[in-house]
Length: 243
Image (tube, rainbow, N blue to C red; front, top):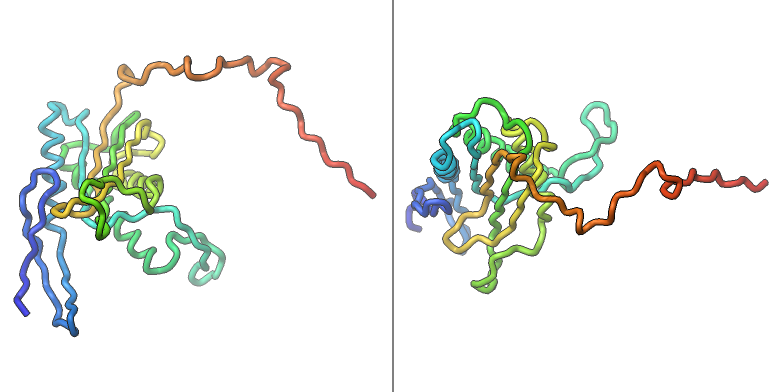
């Protein structure tokens, strides 16, 4: 078996080839396990995107913060009922089993670390204040026999559950103070190209009130007076007991 020392992976931002240390176990039959350390690629992606964001803005106080994480995106929101250690009281746990739970927390921790590193690289002191726009691009493994022209992923995990994990990670990283600041959210799920790694590329940008969307009143019915008797909500009637 040939000695394996590294694997080259392409940066999806600048296309530079990054060498990631790799090792392979002794083959068992026709199979061997390969372990790849993706930290060099993750750090390169963080620095690459942060440099692009810093170069596109002259003020670090209002510039965007961009980050990237290599790895399989994990959703948040699949809950199971478990028991607390010691007390034995019922608790709600993330994930359907211990393995899924461990993979989820490892993923969200990686997103938190990458976002925190990007925040420092952008020269920001503290989280964004006020409304922000969050753009999340999730790259998933391309299934075999997928036509070359197919780029969008229309299977699980759900986009809202992927975004939930990423938004909680942004809060934990100190990029935003609260999820409620996210006034505009763009989530995309795509299939990675053969030379792309799976993972997440995200950007957080401040929103200017002067460029808020125009009124959509023409698409909605006119508001009515909530104090009008015609709009009064009837009080629920207590069901009569039959004895």
